[in-house]
Amino acid sequence: MFSTSKFFFLGSAAGVSFSSVAVAHTNAPFVSAYPWSAGFGTKYADPGTAVASTGLSVAFSVSANVIAVGNGVTSPRVQVYPWSNSGFGSKYANPATVPGGSANGIAFNSAGTAIAVAHTSGTFISTYPWSAGFGTKYADPATLPASTGLGVAFNPAGTAIAVAHVTTPYISTYPWSSGFGTKYADPATLPTSTGNGVAFSPSGADIAVAHSTSPRISAYPWSAGFGTKYANPATLPTSTGNGVAFNPAGTAIAVAHNTSPYISTYPWSSGFGTKYADPATLPTGNGTGVAFNVDGNAIAVAHVNSPYVSAYPWSAGFGTKYADPATLPTGDGAGIAFFN
Image 1 (cartoon, rainbow, N blue to C red):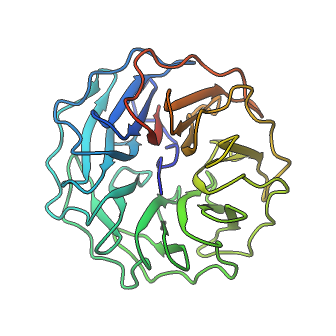
Image 2 (cartoon, one colour; image 1 turned 180 degrees about the horizontal axis):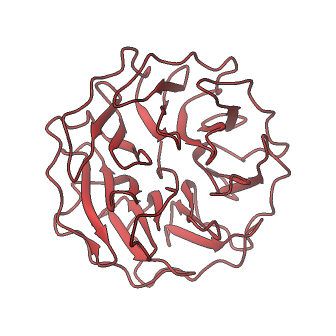
């Protein structure tokens, strides 16, 4: 039910030479952002125009130099700000047509020309052109997701969009070209229950869905549609899968989940390898979102319970946990994203 855009965002914009990490969380100011350089820097000032309510999702567009935060039922449900090494700029105007209900997931396409929001009511997915502000909402897909949208992702080429949602088939995918095409056929083997998060691999050749019941993660080849489901990992996540992310090289996959150890990671090569050892210092509660940084040398988990975010060096396994940020997020972490 949580997103990171889940995820990490690959790429770099001309002139960008700084890194940041942002956490959406349950208490005001609802989003906390930090410089990142092998650890958390001093927290950036909160945005001048506050996020409207509980932070549920966060995503950066590197190509557009912006940050988007999705919030609970309070309108406008999605807030977007310019992003620089100074932190938050002045909030952009709200979309003319706001998403219906809580914004559980947010994603930008790789070109930074479109933004998508998965949400709880109405059409369950809302998409907009983006060019230093929201354009007029794109027409809804002819076949809507079946129910509440919880996660959303564009493929790296920007030619497909996927929505994880509550009821069967739990994942809905569409061609994308400045609007929705005809819904792709459902996978032959569906996820087993509520789709909470979704991610494409960096090559675009695979798609993974984190979901609520065993095996809690389902992955498929992707080529303008679903291929035959990959075998489940030999060691499954221990409970509900909430978020999923591939590392930038496409050689590892991570699942944030309920129940200790709260994060499970696997080698990835057209299927799951043997689960990596758990971090020596675990997150302190249910993992709600996960992201790798663009260099692939760090992984961060948003989670329930203080410190609400835990980050680790990554090199084919977890290193020693980084120190917690000096100023913690103020409530349970719900989404996480890196910028670089």
